[in-house]
Amino acid sequence: TKGETFFWRLSHNSLPLCMNILRQGMDIDTRCPVCWRLNEDGGHCFLKCKFVKKCWRALNLEQLRLSLIDLNSAKQVAIKILSLEEDTKLLVIDFLWVWWDARNKAKC
Picture 1 (cartoon, rainbow, N blue to C red):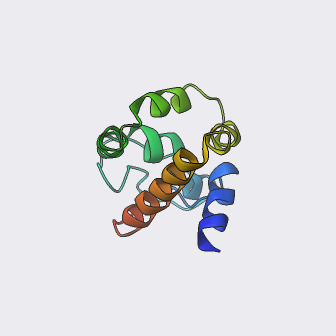
Picture 2 (picture 1 turned 90 degrees about the horizontal axis):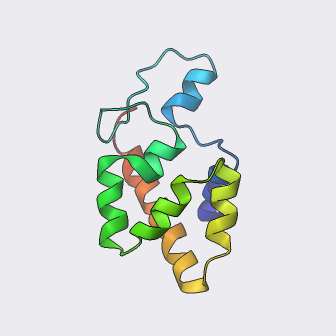
């Protein structure tokens, strides 16, 4: 499914985030298409953007967000998410997918 493909790509840092596109040789504006403040990599897009942080807080998942920021790779983030209790795991994966979908409606 699209959700499974998304999560696999998230865990392998292969989503078409602005910094990943730049690394592939395309000359693009690498600022986050949501906040337009900082370069968009996976950490910024899903954990650090000022707008995504508000969503984590609204879902009462701020402590989890902070623990994910401390991890060193997308793979470690995915492993941590997959180790959560089922309800929380599904909520987080669904949220990340919805955020990605909304982000894609912005321009990169």
